[in-house]
Figure 1 (cartoon, rainbow, N blue to C red):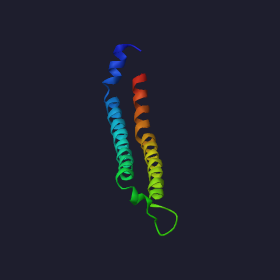
Figure 2 (figure 1 turned 30 degrees about the vertical axis):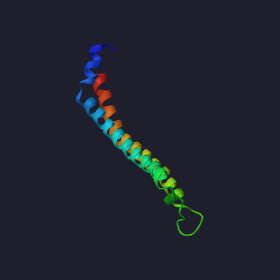
Figure 3 (figure 1 turned 90 degrees about the horizontal axis):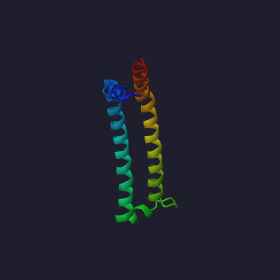
Figure 4 (figure 1 turned 30 degrees about the horizontal axis):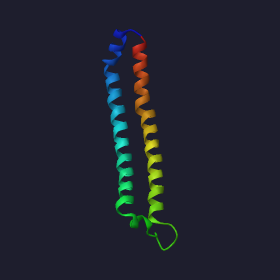
Length: 102
């Protein structure tokens, strides 16, 4: 691929939009996961007693519930990324590929 071809693709409006949308999606999902994870770590560090409390007098603790919620959050964010990539990013990528192949 020639440098001129690379420059023309890089300056294409659809390519710019694809890059913006992908960065925004990746950044927002990463931020959500980092806030949740570091919130959990700070809770473990500064309030471990809260995580050790029983939920309703049984053997299940608040920490187990929070851990399961962290795993579920990661699955949810992965599903959200997959849905968004398939419904928004992939069609834009395909359109760009068709236009630049000509």
